Image 1 (spheres, helix red, strand yellow):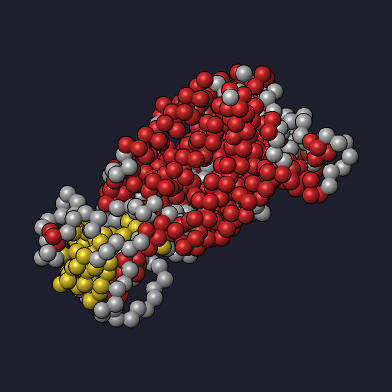
Image 2 (cartoon, rainbow over the protein chains, first blue to last red):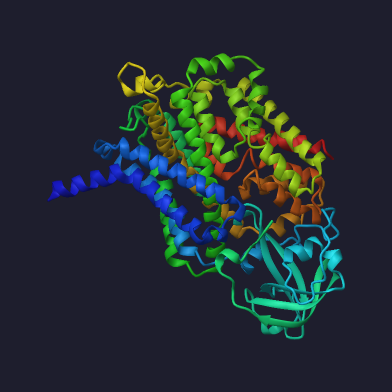
Length: 244
Length: 361
């Protein structure tokens, strides 16, 4: 019995590298399927995931074709530890899928106005149609703020009440991702509404009102004087971020 | 986190002390599996236990969500690059004879540093992919100074990074050019300095600096006759698979440390002191080390500081230092360089980048 258990451990240890790669292959496939990776990565990075799948398949094939049971005897503990470390991100993936960056991340990342782009930016100017009734993304609103000034807009995002918000104000925010959630930048618009206090941090809302600028702490910030704020269901995880 | 980093360094030191005995353990796949020291095991075990503890006890905390999303994102983005880097390394190992490398990049020639720093133009890889490639290049006889110049310059002086910087700064090519020039110049400077301060044997691990076995495919196969192409390719991929397992764990631990910092440290705290001349450069450099962003994305984060008081020199410091030095890179360097060399390399990089950015004022 003892010998059998020992043999099983040796065999499993020898198989560990392949098991690691197969686990990662499954994780990348699962993320690519139905676009789940967009909860973490920029959608344009899908070729990167394909590349990962191909390379992982190659590695698995190479390990299987040159498999040797004897390798299970070499530094058993080291191999298990190595495998455990490489499994940790997969465990985290399993544990946090369905969640997204929220007010906690915003509080750590916001820089005064929280805008990653200058409001009267030097960026390429595009002409936008009147947005009456249509939802504009916060990215469009902030990048082209001057064109929206004084116009009626509709935008969706999360609520951040923060420590400084008064009863009639909150901040509407979303994160914009360049490559991955680690570089996510918050886009924030001040919302003035008589029913602002009804909403809590991280609530998803749709705001309609007049877009303008306001000076807060001697800085110009975008704001919406809202005549309508209503709760909306949180989008699926892969649609919660905006992408640059 | 600091304890974890300290233990990793300590483990590296102990490994070096024991290296002759440790280097003898070679697995069936032809990869070194050095006997880890007790400190090594503690550090890595501590990481695994810490991670599992967070999943079990803090899964519902908002901090856990932020930490988990950032951690998983960094690993998901970096892993394909690392796989690619190790594959390139595997092919270099099997297909590129040492004689060819030493003919093109001979030891003791200063001009090889200038070639090394600009090699990113031909091999546009990010900082995660470049570490396993440099490891193999060093094994193949590339001079230390040229390898370091490639390691530091490659993730900046490449067309993909130039393009992303141009997009982030709305096509301002003067900023793109400044980033490329600073990246290239600093890589050359530090490459030369490291070449003066260290010999290859003193700077890199024994198995990286001299590899008497496994140089060519026929030797590895043990047949003595030339190996078939398919066998060589299989061998290269097998090497890559082993190398990835060896280095990949440092990527995971580094990404975790970066995620912890991003979760706990508010960026506003740094920005509050940005208006002090010179200090903004230092703060932005510190942020670059702590945030661990990909060199293809960091320009967007740097550009986001334009709306605050950060001067261009601070933004440039962030974009130049980040691809050269961050937490995950320091941990990955442990598989290539000895601890004293890493300490000198990190210090030199930090100082040279700081002094270079001061010239922009």
